[in-house]
Amino acid sequence: MIELPEAANLARQLRQVAAGRVVDDVAVGHTPHRFAWFQGDPNAYPGRWRGRPIGAATHHGGFVVLEIGEAPLAVAEGVALRWCPPGSPRPARHQLLLTFGDGAALAAAVGLYGFLLAVVEGEAENPYLARAREAPAPWSAAFDESYWTALVRGVPPKTPLKALLASEQRIPGFGNGVLQDVLFEARLHPRRRVASLNDGESERLWLALRTVLTDMARHGGRVTERDLFGEPGGYATRMTKRAAGGPCPRCGASIVAESFLGGTVVVCPACQPR
Image 1 (cartoon, one colour):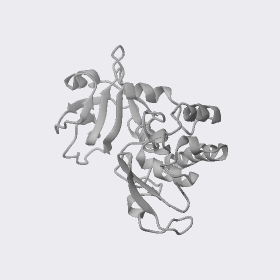
Image 2 (cartoon, rainbow, N blue to C red):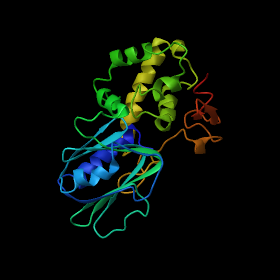
Image 3 (cartoon, rainbow, N blue to C red):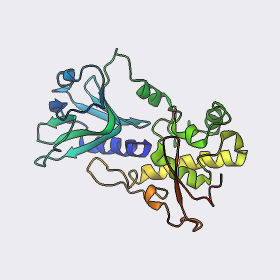
Image 4 (cartoon, rainbow, N blue to C red):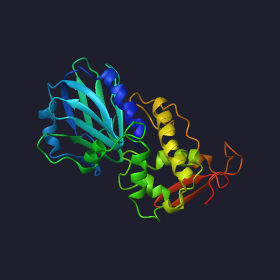
């Protein structure tokens, strides 16, 4: 799943290999997928992109945005982006394939669900992308203590920390995948209510958001996710389902996994008391 660190890394890699190339051909819907979400008519994508140059690659929240002529491609959620060098095989399954004159290609394959949007000026923008464009990244200067305080005060007092951080697009690109390590670093349980935080805990969580996500992005994303070349990221996640039952890396207590708010949370009950 593309979350903030992976989006940042994919955009960086696309700038390295794709910028300046010209799209030779476009294949859409090679492998039908009910939950591959396009913008407008996907059959119009080839006409918009053939012969168009690749420009900058940026990221907004969990979206990777690749400039292609006048209709950028925005990719998000469970989409695997893979770069195929000239002469290399293409993935057997894909929902979008851009090929270039030298035989290189960029493939996009949707897992459970994902966005593959051609963002055309004048058309209504996808609301998730619009929100991601306007919200600052947690590692940016704009995501300062005043922004964080307003974010926390803008939710009902009984809101659990997991819901504060990973729902309602409050922090676009922040999902359950990065949540566990952030809360572990902050020594806070995902079931804690916003109203229960004192000033010191709130500041600790804000700092953990910034430092952990920055570290994840600096290392090319999480080891549980794959980059543009099919390689795992370099950030070794600590609080994952596989860690459940093992010792906490901080205190040695047994790590537990439990269901909460439609997913699994992994915590150290000693370091992260409820």
